[in-house]
Image (cartoon, rainbow, N blue to C red):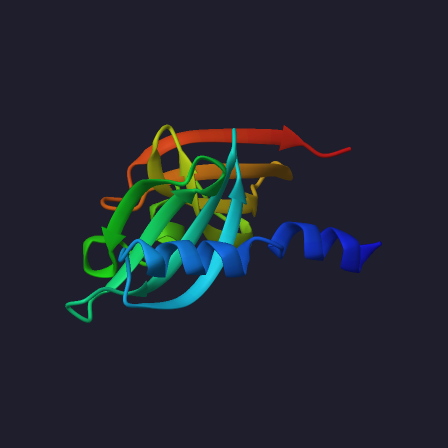
Length: 138
């Protein structure tokens, strides 16, 4: 069952890579990941024709590039963790790129001091909070 779920999640990675290269959006693809928001968004990292590291956010179902951001214009994962508001004694679970509110964001997942499971979305350019959801654990 795990392999079926994983194959479903990653099944379009090769097709997304081929699309990005065929459209000339990148010269080389390093990695493809997927974020499941309102619609699945594929996040592609690689280098452009200037040899700059770029991140593309692709709605593959509609064959549409939603956003591109250069690595130099982004805060890094550690900065995203530091920008999480009111997080004294938090237990970090994960930090990953995502796409919310029509823009690239860092999704920082953690357990807060009240033992709530929190998803906090921070703008990748400046670290400002875009939105946050906290769920009480039972």
